[in-house]
Length: 426
Image (cartoon, helix red, strand yellow):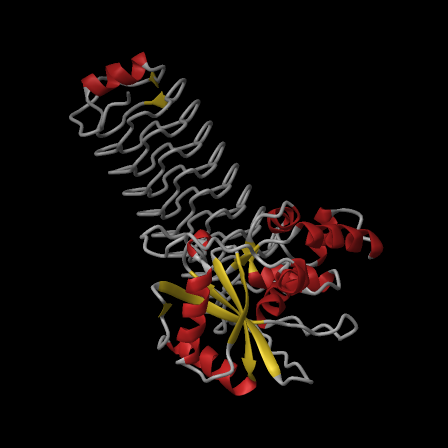
């Protein structure tokens, strides 16, 4: 499988391991002989940051959560505290709360399901994720939500628990009614319950511990193939490679447009001339990556690690690089016009000859950066730290701006500047 058509980007629900779940996971690591969490992450082709978040009880997306639990031979629903809490730790409900509020908590949605049927009762359990504040759910609203559910699939649906993490309704019902409920939610027919937007529904896996693990899903098969069988120009448009460890992979000329690479480890990867336009790379690790001539137009690289990456001649117009780490990165002759580099770390970066027309550099760290020959027409440098930053032969720098930058610690190595619309740092 060299192409990817399976993974259209969808929102994803995130899960956090319970305290007891982490204790089990730590014990499982030792029992299974993993030397370290880094070693475990590498064995599962998961980025180290994803595994670290899991063990720090930070939210990670469901498919990664399941993969970790499967590798540790643990039931993901038990590790998440869903099954245990539904049985023994019922959430205390504040009967004085009211749902009349506009305050909501953002969540991400689920896209994979495992259906497991209770052989004795023939009932299915599921989690419905609602967008909202758990503190707004009182006993009256619980009854109201249950009545609302009954009007959609049938008369067997019952809410067995309500948990935090946005609002998670643990429900059970007959196979027919639950499947009908799933269909209505996935089709968009059922969009809200008593004013709370429905994010998605996840059918729970309650299989026994000795049940054989499912085969790697298509996403992880693809990750394995990318790592083990390099193919130049691979077609990966819309692929879901989030949280994957692709470090040191060869993706020269690959088409990764609109791909989901959130949290992926792409350190040392060769992505020269790759198409990453509109790709989602939030929080990805691209340190030391080869991105020479890559197309990153409209890509989201916020909070990404691009330290020591080679982005020379890259196309980054309108890209979101806010809060990204670009320290010591090579951005020479790159097109960064209209890009957002606010609060980015560009210390020691090479921006010589770069197109910075209308680029947002507010509050950026430009200490020791080289901006000689860069076109700064319309760029916003307000609040930027320009100590020891080198300028020279820049379009868009007036004498007034030049004097102000020098006062802020910048170094100029050219003749008087020209007319400018650059915003003053302050």
